[in-house]
Each structure stands twice: as C-alpha cells, then as structure tokens.
Image 1 (cartoon, one colour):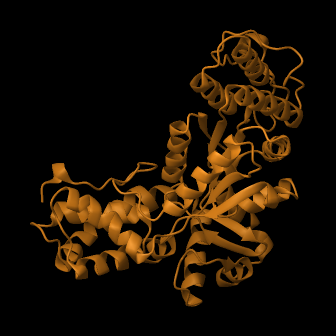
Image 2: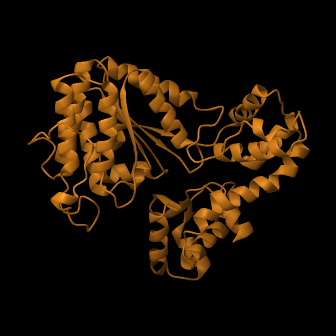
Image 3: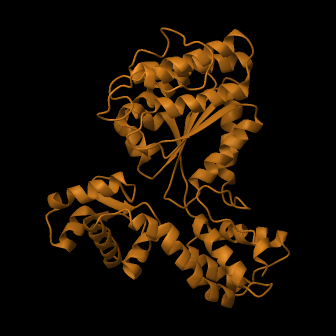
Length: 405
C-alpha cells in the first residue's frame, strides 16, 4: 500500500497515531490535577515499565493534559553522573514562563531558580567533579537577579525544598499549578533522588499545587525506597505494561481505518503473536506490514511476508544498538541470562533470573561476574528489582540474543 499514507510511527518517544490502552492512566491524572487545583491532598506520580512500552509517550501525554488544565510545566531527562540542578532549573524556568505571573512574584520565583541553578558546590556537577570557576558558571537564561539566601546553600536537599516551596507558593497565588516531568528517573544521582523525595514530601504536607511526574525502568520504586523509606507512600505508582489484545488491535485498526484500510481477524492474531502487545513493536510491525501489503484488507499472509523486514529493523535499531554498547565480557553475561531464561521455561524474557544461576551457567563464581553485571546495570541493559534477581530492560531481548548473538 502507499507508504506515504502509512499511519504507523515507530520511534523513541514518538506518539503513535492511536494512544491505545492508556485511558486509565490519563483519567487518573486528570483527577490528580483537579484535586491538587482544589487544594486536596494528592501524591506525585511515577510510571514504571520496560523499554518500548510507551512510558515517554505517556509522560508527554500527561504533560499535555497539564498544559490544557492551565498548569505551568517543564520536562527533563535524567542522565547518569549529571547533577539535577541545571536540567531541573531549565524545566522550572519553562514552567514559570508558562504560568506568566506578572510583577514581583514572577521575578522572585525566577530569582530563586537562578540562585539554585548557579550554586554548584564540589561534586554537584557529577561524582568527583570540581565546582566550576565563576567565569565558567552556567547561565540559566534568567535576567531576574538571584535571590540571596534562597535555594543557594549548596546542600541539594535544603535547596530543592526551598525552591519547590517558593514556586509552589507562587503557583498557588496564580490559582494554577506546576508539574515537573522527569524521564529516565532511575538515572538520578542518589543525593538528587533523596532531595527530590524530601521536597515532594514537604510540598505534599503543605498542600501547594506542585507535583512531580516521573518515568523509569521497573526498579525505579526500589531506587526511591532506598533513598527515603516513606517514598512508597509519597508517590502513586503505575506499572506500564504491554497492551492487552483489545488495545493492541485498536492501535492497529483505528489508524488504518483513517486511511480507509482494514485488517482481517487472522492478521490481527498474527500481529499480536509477533509483537507480544508491546507498543513499540506494534508500530514497527505495523509500518512494515503496511508497506508490504498489496492492498486492503491486510491479511495474515501480508504479516508473514513483512515480518522479516520488521525483525531486521528491530535487530539493528532496537536490539543491536543496545547490544553493541556492551563489552565482550558483558555480552557473554547477557547471552547467559538469555539461556538461563530459556532453560527455565519462562514465557517472557522480561522474567527475572537468579544471578547465581547465570554464574553457574558460565561456570564462574558470582563474585567474579560482579563487574560485568554492575556495568550492564549502569548502562541500563539489565535491572534488578529484587536482591539476587536480574532481568532485561528490553522486551524480547533474550530471544534476540539466542537467535542472533
């Protein structure tokens, strides 16, 4: 069929034509916004899930909902070994600009953000890094003068509590709210995680209209809990998983219908078997099948013909790019994980496997494999949601390794 009219959109964080299966999260967030706006107590939100399930897409959709509600919003993506100060300052700067408070309140808020952004003590710009010299200081693009004595102590926890309290107060004065969206939240430095939890705790106690919405890998709740024991009560956790059959069908059928095309029932069954209901795979297979199908309706034969093309695209762009980041020793560990998962008879490569069994498969002591395992954890290729267990962060990665590595 005409590739120019192809409605499917595989891409990192790219919104699909039909955001299927996420109505529950969208509706719940609308309730959060309305409750906070009315001064009712409500928790911040954390989305967790494997890569390719649409966390970033959903995070962006929640931000759009906040914008429609008249809130000021800002977004950042956490990175390993990067201080939270600069990206958070930029995000909050944008949120304050969106609120557009006139006069002294707005200038004071911007001044506090500037104070927070420019206070970089030793180690704040990353572990082991030195504080920048005055002439090297980052400029947050704020013309308002820094507010001395607010959010500039150098202690990230004290400073972040003061910063969000001041901005929450300013938002309350405008009758609206501020929402900060943090992607890849599991990559925040431990001190920054602790500070963010403390600030969110303070905000929730005072009832100010400011919330944090985070997204990250499945072990993010463990990261937060390790920082502050009360974090499990501080956030509303939502596990983002694969789509069920009805939602997966809708993600394919509705965009096709907009272009005057249909799927035969057997084709939808074949698509679900191939994709496992994972949103990124649905878009990748949908695009390949559309381009290969001679016409409508799309059949199971069309899916069979196009599947090698979709698999080849995923092998390079989704799986291969991650596999190439691993060293030879780390790849050996990944392959062992895949073999152990298959031997256990699991139905899904997302299932966790014991580290002791991986070591036994390799004929090595678990301690000798710690460097490879720790490096893979840091690279985000595996995660540990429970002591002694590890799993792939990417769905179907084990199958890819068994077939291609």
